[in-house]
Amino acid sequence: MLAGTRLPSESQTRPRIESNDVLTVHSLFASCMFQLLWGKVFKYFLLKRAFLVAIAIFEIGSIICAIAPVSAVLILGRAIAGVGSAGVVGGYGMYAIMMLPQLKTSEADPVV
Image (cartoon, rainbow, N blue to C red; front, side):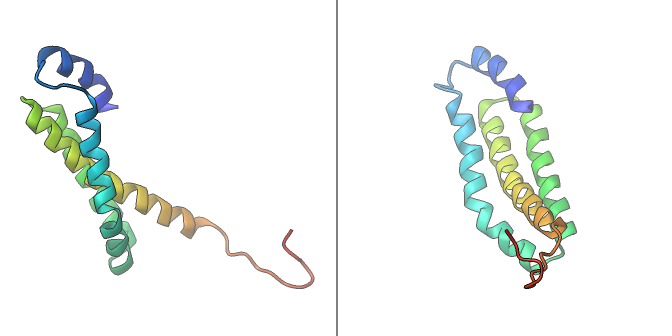
């Protein structure tokens, strides 16, 4: 949401940015690049702490985007937020799997 309100004014005041796609690509690239690393972090460390660290990294990236004086800092903030978002998505998936009840299968109660 933060980038959605910032992008129109950013593209109007700084014509150096050829396209707003540059801002999106850095976030998605960082997110994809760190997805596997966050999987290992969630495997070897406590899930709650690792998830909170991922949220903190995402928020730090968002704050950098909010106070960015130039386009390069905005792109850096989006990349940092992308690293955090990879951990948030992975951690959310881990928590969702943990919350599912364990399926109990037996011959008397077959799973349809």
